[in-house]
Image (cartoon, rainbow, N blue to C red; front, side, top):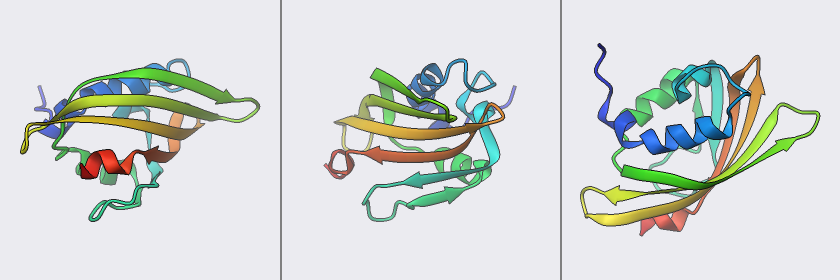
Length: 134
């Protein structure tokens, strides 16, 4: 069995809530199964050192393999489907611990996801940037 990178394990609540929100719209059991190889991710965050764009599934997977915050859960999912389009808007929250400081981490997200051929091809993400900085 292939060993899962620590960042993937840390972010499992995120992966789970996203797949719950995309249920019936994408193929695959895990988030990474649902992402197209050439997917584009735009992050509308203003955090020093964090890229505003990642292109390709492997690029995002590489970044996520070192995800440091230990998420305990994710909740408050709201899902909106854009009629006549393959676009899904999800609002959700994640909760965890920043291991270096021991401080709680609570954040809110809005993710706008475009689906093509049952795969995520475009992801536009908004979050509370101040929650990360604090």
